[in-house]
Image (tube, rainbow, N blue to C red; front, side, top):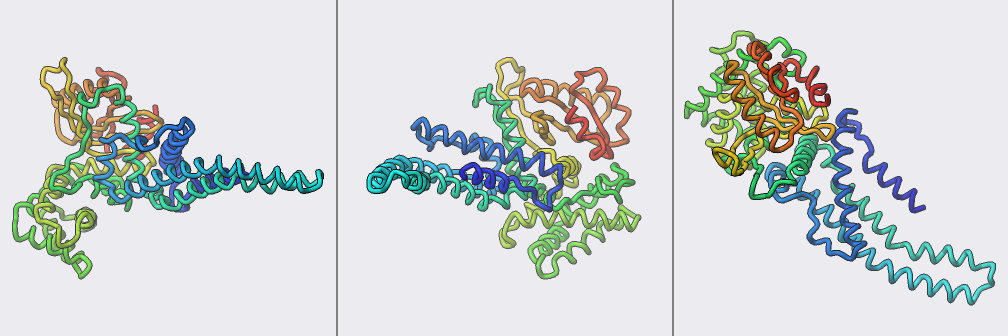
Amino acid sequence: MHLVIIFIFLNYFIKPKMYMTIVYESNLSKEFLRIILDYIKEGLRLLLNNSHTGTLKLLPKWHRDILKFIFPSEMKKIEDATRRVVQEVDEEIFKYKEYMVNALLKMLEEIQKRREEEGSAVSQAYSESAVQPFYRALEAMMRMHVEIADVFSSRSFMAAFLTLSLLDRKLQRLWEDKISVKINREGGIPIIHSTWSRLAEKEICLICKPKCAELDIEETCKALERVGRNISTKEDLLNKIHDGMVDYERGGRSKLSKITYNELNPVEQNKGVKELLCEYIIEHLCALREQKQPNELLIEDIKTYINKVFVNRSFLEYEVYSALVRQGIAAIPQLHFSIRDAQLETSPYEAEVDVVATTNAKLCLLEVTTLGDEKNIEEKIKKYEWLKNFIEADKVIFVISQAMKSVKDVFSSHQPEFSCMEFNELYSGIHKLLTN
């Protein structure tokens, strides 16, 4: 009976969701489940050894801080549910001894009163009473699943959670005062990370759509850069964008479309491409809008985001990150590493990695670039060589535009863990590169 209950619980816990792809189901949700169950098992081991579970942490502090900043509601739900289940199991274990002793005493009394042939039936009845705490502990775990079930539908959260978990295992050998990993908290809100996670959940992409296969990367970058610069440098346009975002539920989207489309007119003649770019910009603005209440959304937040994403071409990093998550590869964008080491000429060593990804327990660093010559690429490779060796990353992949394909020869003279690919290979080649 007990094994049947456990089987039903675990089977339900990892039951495939109809809206998940097979790759996503196997790569993200099952690995995420493993970490959650490992946490619970560690809590049970502490209880078995009569140790206090109050010091048990689901995640290390830096890891937890990043996730809480990007995914506050998901992290609260996970932490509350897992902490509660360990506490409830602890309480049931405490009760188990009392239940067992009382059941045995009552069973012996009944056996003395009844005929010997009735002893087995009495034993069965009281053994079921004795294991009531066990049943309740299982029920607590099943309730936990119900509480956090919706978290399993958030691919971007699980992708970030798993990437940071592997990175933490890589960094455990380093002293905390020697390395720190963080994200940029500019503007007081997770401008990039939280916005991009929402876009990735909606599978918003520009470069990797079949109908966008013929988009010229460089021309697309220039068009978005010009529109972004026009909007961010003109106060009247910024005010109109802000008003459209605040009034989004009352016709604000059509206002945003009109403004964006007009700004694209001078820089893009193809109507189909223009519509794609317009829709793409609006989706970014809508995802940004969700970060705050309408009355809390600042014009400066909008300006900062437009400059970072469109003027500085960071949307390409989003495209790579989104492509990875859609394929069931755990990833998180824009992680900042700060390393202090006496052997370094300049300490601390500072580096921001465009995208950090993991699959099959391998850690990969991705650099996204559309500009630069062979000398510039050599300098970037040198930076990544040191970082890769220090944090024991398995691969470094440069994602480049077709216009830069002449720099591919540079990688042949470096470690085999270094490679490059073009944007149009994000779906056809990225999984192979990461897993080989």
